[in-house]
Length: 182
Image (cartoon, rainbow, N blue to C red):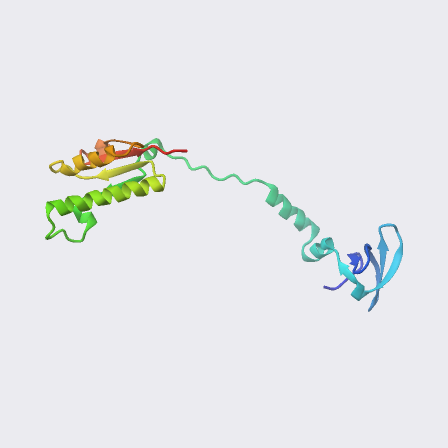
């Protein structure tokens, strides 16, 4: 970095600093804080931090940057409509055609087992990720899956379950509310 008149400098091997008053090819005259004029070789001086910043950025720009950093920016608040707030955070569709590509050759017992394993895995996932509301879509059918799900949900102390929104799911879904520990 090149030195110029007016730069604030420090002397390398001494506890001295000052402002450059005159400048030759090798010799530099600085004025200390006490008003003394001292001569040094350019190699004996280094720019002070403030002078380095002045070289990089204008003073007015520094103040603008500092002011910008100090002003707190408000994050835009997202308004959630009451209807959207009532929506479940997670839906799990247990219809067999959503779980496997083909259920051909599977017995009713195997299908029910797969649906129950999926329900349990998704419930554990929701608990781990602290998702409070989960809707399990089981369909109407004969009610076997619905009863098995109720049996599964009764094993947990930290949740309650009830029929999901009738307008959206009809009778074919159960909503689970998971109580979160703080």
